[in-house]
Image (cartoon, helix red, strand yellow):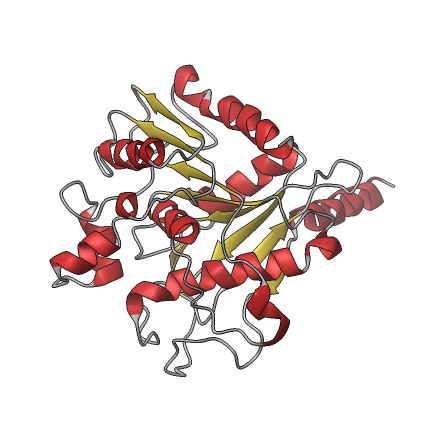
Length: 301
């Protein structure tokens, strides 16, 4: 009897931890590819440095608890690797406790040898992911008008790109053409925003190349792309972040104010570049409650 119970518990654990993997691109329709065959390279557990094509991992709450809202979680990693566990799965599981469906996106990194144009590869993947989830919203029991993005570090830069670049780079045909690529709201945690004076140099070099132009730097500094069409956004940053200066979030929020974009900015005295699900101080840990309350307002709009 004890043996049966143990087996049942193990099986239940497998069922709970197993998540649905979704291929982002329809077969043969992934753009910006040289057609190389790449292996997944995981430098250490939880950090991938190379993938063949973008994938989504769906984390869905029980149907009885599921709200209409869904969020695509975009891991960071300086555009050199994907912190899919700490910067992806952990956020998705937390969102599930709020009744929010989450989809973790492992996107093509701009350092991939398969990309023809490095800087738009990640953007194409997040745009296609938004289209895919929005198009299949009924299947997931969510609303196509309540789909947001949550990006951390360089993933925050990609979330800001998705929020502000209105050109559709997916090249998708058929009914996918008419589906919007713009999220309904955005959550940016310790985001890379500026690629100039306050840049995280690694993120800039990996996205644009080491010898990029001043014009390209300005084009991909997201505070320069904010308009009145930018979706509502909430930002969280630590004042003592030595990897991505807090000025990044300040510049973005100033641009939001200038363009009358609804949102909020919270700066904590501590937290460094590690604001996440587990935090060293109680004050910094409050970002989750603040975010939860803000998401409640987004869901009641």
